[in-house]
Length: 309
Image 1: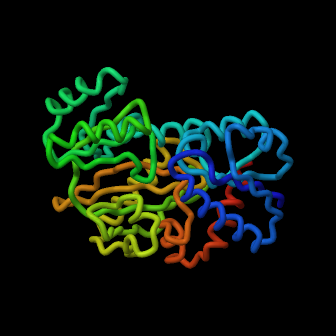
Image 2: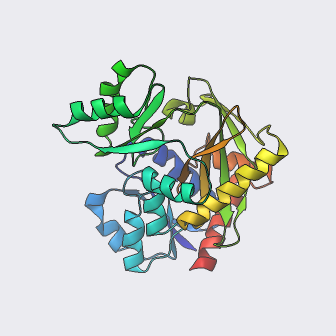
């Protein structure tokens, strides 16, 4: 097949996307496909408008890639692509909206509230957060990935900087209770209605929490696959992962992040519709555990997308 790979982009996750794109491109070539690689930029939309390919593999992360915008353009052009469509992508990217959906269907989430950031209301937001939350809590952009713009507030003096930091990435910020526990993630793959969860991964970051460096720098974190959890918890995480994937309308693949508390609660954090596919990424680690090489995993996504198309 002739497959275009979109990678790079303009979001804060550009460097990660470059690495993801490189991995996908190499895998597709090894699998015998003809590859057109595009370092995507919204100023160069003609590169997309003039595409003549069988399929697009989206290796973008963050804005203009994971939020449904590029999916909408490809839909209008009638070009099939790997992964979730416009609505599922947009919902997963909007943490507040997706949390509302999860809560309605019995998937536990951290208590949270959103605040609209404008230049002249930062002080008012700080005061509102002080009234609504007691440390520790988390301030982060409502629509951003890779923990960019995230602050764990341990003292109220950190609120001002946390609001500014999150506000640089999004005009809506999300504040939620800090949930202590073990960080785990569950890859989901399959055609709609027949998805399955892959082995649960526990993430042990070398820093205080699973931040950008922990995710993408070699040695930044340790991945335990499968996670050493009671069978009942493993089953619950896998069941909730597939349910979350389906509730948002995701397609082909996603990765669902959780915190498992000391009280044995599984608290969902978010669904990633375009999870990282770098050499240190989580999804390939889990796929390897069920016998899929990186190349086989990528081909599985292609096959599912062709069936979908």
